[in-house]
Image (cartoon, rainbow, N blue to C red; front, side):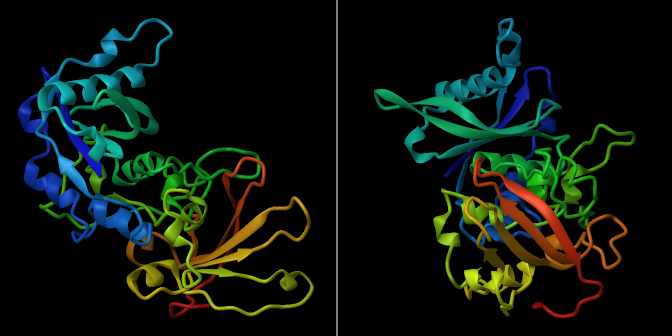
Length: 328
């Protein structure tokens, strides 16, 4: 379960805080373009998006107490969780991660390890931190860190390099597969730092590459033969035919599983395992283009996983101009 906490500084107007109604819609897996709708679907309904919404808290910025050389982000999260503990005495055994939503520009990050009290002892949980200036696709990425996922890299080890995953939303490999969703009064309104302020909550990124869930230790049930097709090693010596369903269509077909990820074993000892997925312009992938004008065309996207550090690497794509249907 996720502990969802809204935080404002004591000098931030209370009206800046997203309301209970808005937060409950944002965490409703049945509301299109909500955070829970995105995450349940991109994880093929494996991510646990159950949550408890705490009443908003008002505090002074805990980062002011960070000593020289200290980690201000650690002080920020620790300070918020300590105040939640003081005010509400929650049973932290119920929670696996926290989502902190700040009512003023504060920071944007995810993951980490934060100590909370349980009984006579303690435990550590990860957290995702965002604020009202954060874009939706960036928040998706930080929640991914709280689930243990990392950015995709390129062959040189540079971060945020896959156009085909919101775990690379910082740059998408210098492409732009995001798009603007329609206005929905049920969902949060972001307040960007540009002039006039834009609503970053309407900036939607693509589904996370399913390779992330294939290697995730927290979602092992993703690796079902109905979802993941293991290409036999004989493909190295002779052609092999198989069928993939587009990622968005495979998600839409749930609970009927369809093959959305092909795994190609290494061609030599110590080599990379490669992964192929079909991405078309639909649903959360609507930002992919037919002509590739934004650098992110509909395509067979190819990723690999490093045998040394386990990081997902974007390799390349095979564009599919105006390819019809859900399969290829």
